Image (cartoon, rainbow, N blue to C red):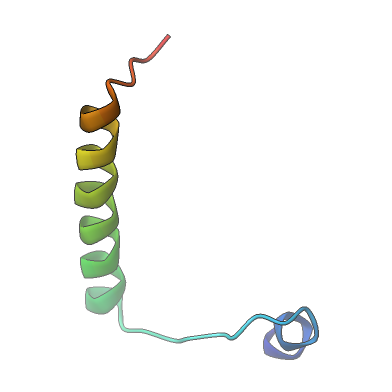
Length: 43
């Protein structure tokens, strides 16, 4: 998989489950602020 992604110009990064969970929490918080700021509503 790493070789495939490298050929596509992507860099593979490995993390621990804890690091990945922290990343997801940060992404959710950041996206929530953006969604709230622009007033996006679910349809």
